[in-house]
Length: 234
Image 1 (cartoon, rainbow, N blue to C red):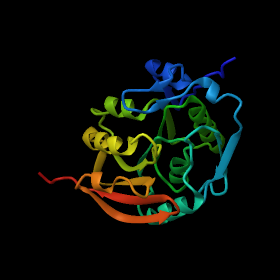
Image 2: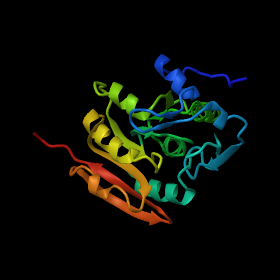
Image 3: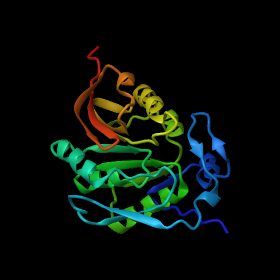
Image 4: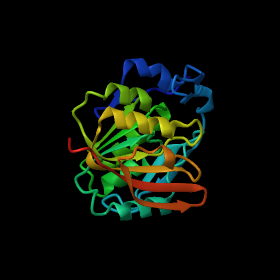
């Protein structure tokens, strides 16, 4: 029996994405983003991380055991949000490739006015929804959709994000492609910030010229950095 798809008032699932969320298709979509069969996900135990600071400090976030799902380590999250301590209050945030949602929930805990979680795996989406309900995080919204398809649909959206978290799967080259797509989608406000988590050897040469590094650091095999988005005054 397949797990039931659960939705609530803060969970949006597009009709065309239901098949993708349940993993009926095997292989890769046109963006090279892997789709998995449901049998890869059934009967896998849940894991958890804890929020490091803020309103929900020490509260546990459950997430399923899924291939490629790797929440940002506690030490890295603490460093990132120390960088953001003067910028996060009241900010509108986008957690693209949300996975466990750890980055978005950390932002909500520290005063973000809204976080939109974008995730294509239905089990991960259900975990994010459950964590939103358990924490009573009313400013969190989760969308079950592919990140690239969501960006395509939002090109005409009037909403502007001031902080975007980019931590896609390391395999498949998704990061370089999503940076191009995010820049062209015009969803970032002038002066907004983008957080990027990546393998050490990847991406810097592919960043747009107007993405200016604010901070960066290495932890093990991971490089992470914060970038300021500058728009032309013309």
